[in-house]
Image 1 (cartoon, rainbow, N blue to C red):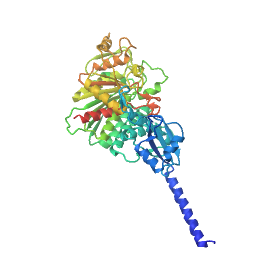
Image 2: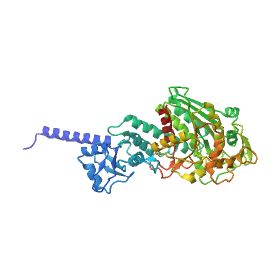
Image 3: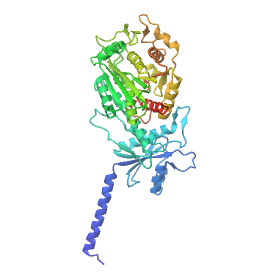
Image 4: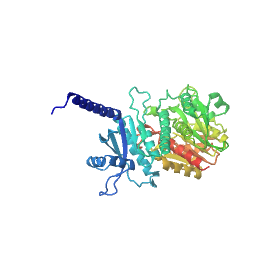
Length: 517
């Protein structure tokens, strides 16, 4: 029997509306993606071991996810990913990432928490894969550790394209399922802190002069003006402070030097002794009269990596509202060849009165740090830590595996080491033997020489010995970050480029010191 025209029309309208509704839903979720974790099988006979969030999704799909994962190839290795399309109505693109062993923890041989590192690597890989698919809205499985998952997402998606016309799609990430929101947000702030250091280090030297650097940090700290004070000290102040070593480096450039001084007052007790962080801030290092080779010299825009990591760590500490007092000091300048520049053999006087024979103008970082370290003692510090892309010898010694640490304090070393295990951004202790001190105090014209007596031998160690001559505090550490300045492919959750390391380790150290009060 034929249906009346009215019934046919109503039926057609209902079908059309359903199609529209279905199309609308598909359009609204077309750019949504989901990153889920799966653990490594312990034996061949084991079934697929999902995280809680992934298992919940698999159940909602009646086992379709585990079925597709089994059919699509061998089990996923740590940090590898596989994408599935059209499985879930809310997430057209689902990426499953390999997390390694479910019971992995701190690895004594590797000096890091293997589980946290695996989560960072895996989440980073998943988020990048979705970014390549131009998926702008991504939900991330916390994988049992919201902070590490957030760090992996934030660090993995960063790319410096500020000056490019064509940019990668910006991806918004949020946790999927039940998660400790405080843990996730902490990871976001840790990741953003390191990304700030990466952005500062990547910026070309003509876009990141000493003045621009200081202004940028001031702007980043402006939301925390109630507990942060920023001083941008001009050349006249530097001269009054008799920082002759710092001035000798800066005088070769047309760019005026800036001594950036940051005071973060996070402790309830305002009289609490501060942690003082000092960062080398050479915004471009040509080598001066001792000119560097032109090949690779462009990377010397990041010779302010020490200042970048130190200042970014303070921005992060302020955002986290850490209950600790921190002072940041960053002598900022360029090292350029000119008629006014330091000449090999010149003798300059540091703030503490010691004279220095400058036999190599490319060993300038230790000169500007010498005056900053002297000044750091004015604040009765709980500890002084300086960070600097100081020596190529450090890169030769450790490569990008870890930051070299020279310290006069076992107490400070233990806390730095503990912090680095949590962050996965490792540190390794190096010697401060008198053997090296003798090599820099044997100078023909002055109290000290800015390079070691045997030049190439133990270069990172003689540089540390030089800095020790300007330290009287009982708790001091020098972090030589030259080897970790860049990333090629060594850290899987960082793209190629400037690394911003070890910002998160400095933040974690500050958090650790705050918890001990």
